[in-house]
Amino acid sequence: MIRVVLADDHKMFAKGIANLLEKEEDIQVIGVFNNGKDLVEFLKKQSVDLILTDMNMPGMDGLAAIQQIRKNKIQSKVVVLSMYDDEDIFKKCQKQGVDGYVLKDADPDELVYTIREVINGHHVMHFQRVLKQVDEDQYYDSFKQKFKLSRRELQILSLIKDGHSNQSIADDLFLSIYTVETHRKNIHHKLGVNTVVELMKKALEMNL
Image (cartoon, rainbow, N blue to C red; front, side):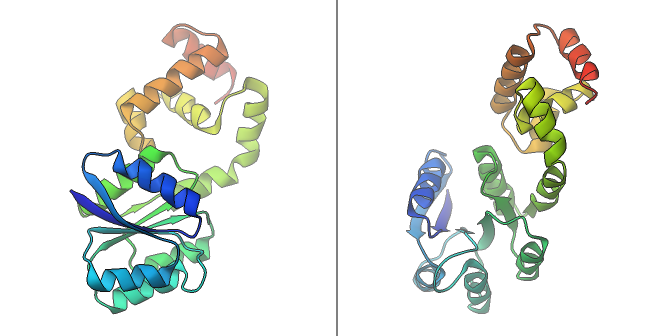
């Protein structure tokens, strides 16, 4: 069982994340806090496997909390769950030795995937992939207006066109195979196609 503690000053968001994680059979949320100070005090008394923390919190923010956690020689893994795609903040987190960095608008599957990968000894940083997406906002918005496809659906369609299997797409985008299959069904429906051949033809017409 992966024992997780969560810190985020937005109470509804924190509760939602806790409920999401509790649905996983191998994850247990043992504490939810709304500031870094309470998080640090809790960790002095209780050991956990993974700390999931926001960056922007009142009093002691996420970065200060991470610094104190490292100073206290707490060995728990640390994953930052942030709304910021700012490179300076990301580098500061890296300097503090965080094990994972996930943006708050990521798919729930990405967060669960990150937690499990980090526990298994891997570093998972979604930042650079998200930066690339931000740079391409105008590109994606034009397709969204014309074809009514979401950013994620356009990503998946582009990967399908390049010959990726559902499993390959799931691995590349940190999604479950079920999520990819659901997106594919939605893409077929929105583009009015029934077969893979028709879908490939449509993708070429869209110049993806």
